[in-house]
Image 1 (cartoon, rainbow, N blue to C red):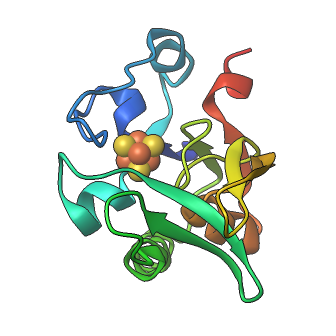
Image 2 (spheres, rainbow, N blue to C red; image 1 turned 180 degrees about the vertical axis):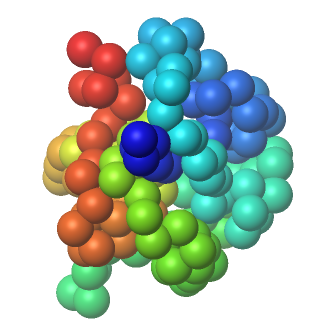
Length: 147
Ligand code: SF4
């Protein structure tokens, strides 16, 4: 039997990789994942370390970018490069489960702001989820997966 390979935001699995070094452990999700091959990921921990400043998704003419809430720098590239490397490393992933509302991992739930920081959407894909969607991988927010 071929086991389903599922990529999951590491903070949902108990890794203390959130910006404030906490986690988002989700017992219902852990139960639902039993018997599946789980591959954790955390682009922000890899790119910026933990703890770290938060970032927001901003709409620009060139597309969505992630901006540091500390110094306004564009932090998109290291997250996007991590995502490309991750999916190239694990080409057989069947399903991507992202932490809802994250600007990196949210699938249909990330907040998007305009360049003046006005909220314009709460239904966007984060930068890593966007790469998964682009590759045709099935993607779902964790809160939807366990609903
Ligand atoms: S939501 Fe994504 S980027 Fe943020 S801590 Fe969890 S795995 Fe890392």
